[in-house]
Length: 594
Image (tube, rainbow, N blue to C red; front, side, top):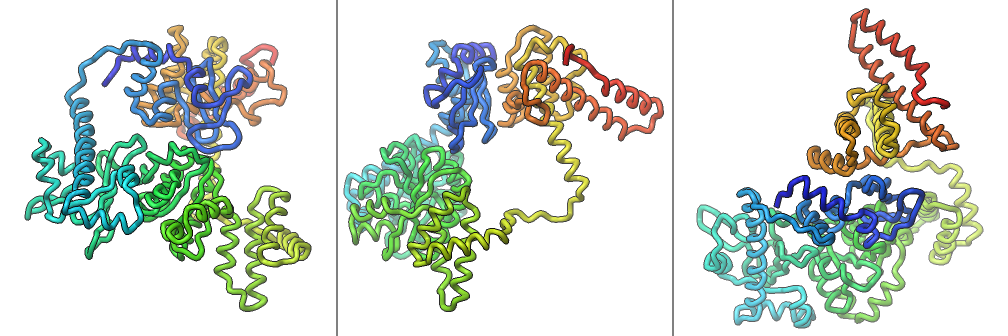
């Protein structure tokens, strides 16, 4: 549904951003605004800012920002029209029942139909499991120890062995081949149409709102591939989904239990561990980490206890570490995976392993020890050096000392000798280079990029300052125009802001919303949320000094424009004009008594 700008503005105006955000984020008053922990990335110190004056939010950590509608879009994972409808209902605004365009109707109908198809397919597979033909599927799940409640909870099923039963069923339900082709559930070839899944136990894949969006299937007898998944479709992207998250996100546990594959997730839920989830595909990715970090502050890894599983655990630790979540690793020795462990030792023993799980650092040390056989004194020294280098990554001496004590206890080292060795090693420690930079780019270009970045930051600072001090505009406009801004997005924002000032109606959220939609750029909010830094500010940050800082920024922007003009012209008259302008700017006084 498309809504006119007038009704959108009415909805936004009637939903105070502080009220809306404070209902889901704990905010505290700081000066004229509010601060809290960002709900869009994991952090321990609040960098999330909400301005009641500008009716905007902005995170200085992940640089996400916007108005109240943008917040609902991102927090609730809604489209913009859905966010407006949500806020309208909250504020009691009656939205017009505007007729959708044919294109809008088609998109909504098509997505809805694809979801319907998957829902019907899931029901079809579930019923098939309890038919005479599905006995092989029931036997498989019984052999894996699953109870009927778990089978129902995950909607597990069975696909028939005759090639096109599901296709015929859905055709009879009234769906045409164009939609069925888009569902990814069928193969269309010159030889005809066939079901993608047959003779397999079926695992519906659901989004976090319990909508079936895809399937995974495991062959019950001989056949390849062993596991088969739906291809990516209009409603399914494997990078954006964690298997089991629709259930785990409602768990009372304070952690998510991350494991490998459908059956590990299901087996853990079957044993009472309802916070288990798994990535779809062969590897845990940045997308997966972002999804996990949005749901929890604590992750416990329970990947397979073999070489591949341990390597995957190390990769997951490296990725998750960027999101500042607590990470622990379950030791399942001597068993391969959670399912095998629980079958042999039971749920209580597995719970005990969770409670005693190593943190990520100690797991990494353990992996170093497993890699190093200690056949010679030199092997042990190499291990000590590697561990010392790892300890240098930690934040403080106090934290390092606690780990040194634990490592000495585990590996039978003398604390004083180890600590002395560590301190000597620390003197020669060189941090590892995490990125390799080529020498193809000349140094001059790097400096030029730094200068450009500095200018863009200055332009954002000035726009933020003007937006926060509207009384200054009537003075500033005599010295700088929107055309003086160099960065295109800042220039466009300045044009709209200055136009609003001239018309006497300031609405920063509308500028951000319009620009974000036009440019498809989440960073637009940062243009009006860049406070003056120490680069331009005196420590004595009163109004007089703030005016002086603004004056310095205006001078910087104007001088940069003149320098660019000088570099691009050979006209003597223009060159002389530029030189005269430079002289004037050196003595520029915009504000009195500064």
